[in-house]
Image (tube, rainbow, N blue to C red; front, side, top):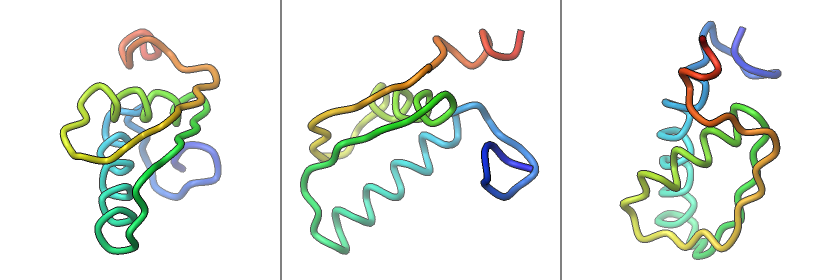
Length: 79
C-alpha cells in the first residue's frame, strides 16, 4: 500500500509526489483560477512540498508552507 491511507504499491518518499503536487497546483491555477496557495505536509508530504518548492519553475504563488517532520533527503530516510 502507498503512504498513509493512499492507494498504490510504492512510495517514492516525496520525489515523485512533488511532481504530483505540481500537477495539482497547475490544474487548480489554470482551470479553476486559484492564484495563491498555502501548502501543508507531514513527513513524506513535507518532503514532497520541499521538493516542489526547490524545483518550482511555474508561476504559481505559494504564500506559505507548513512542514511537519520532513526529512533532509530521501537517501537519509532509506539508509
